[in-house]
Length: 243
Image 1 (cartoon, rainbow, N blue to C red):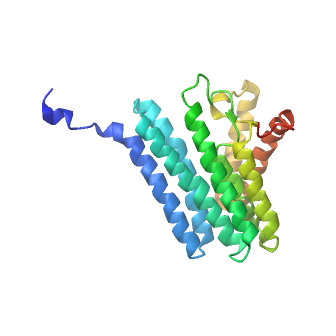
Image 2 (tube, helix red, strand yellow; image 1 turned 120 degrees about the vertical axis):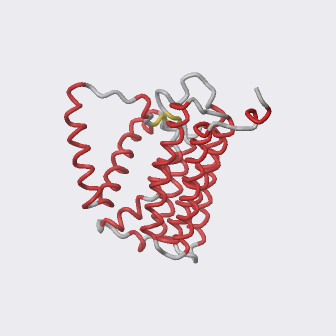
């Protein structure tokens, strides 16, 4: 092989990392819009970064372009997008700069996200890791749960800005769930029975309709459904959630 050819890398091998960097840029831009109080735009950018986070790993596996570099880059991007950005967003939206305890729980949430990602990296090479279930709430799902008070406000169901301590403790609870031993849903383990195919298709139709009519209500529903899936796991490990 010529030296020049050895110095070149196929574009397809770089594509997953480019997607990861794009998601990281969305997370950073979300922080920018949070700072200027454009909260709806900031939330949408976090949601888009979560969508991209699901794509980069899939692309890497399909192209057989997985690498240790890409995995570490993805974790660093996830910490920014799903630990830092949602924490700052909830803080600016509902907690206020004079709420010291609120800031403490924002730190708890961000630190829990960091610990969750570190544990995932350590367990990544174990056989079957993430195939049947995750241990603790994954970082993207944790970010979506953390934003529930904002979804409720935007949907018009409940404005929680008048109850900042409730929002703060919710943020802390989500952080605990991320570092917990609670078994949580993994898409890789999802199997749909034949009788449920029609219901799933119709659910997709309803979801698409809500995206363009009552988007924030849809996000509330998605979060509540996810919380419902956590309850059996929480009951199963009760008393040893963090052990």
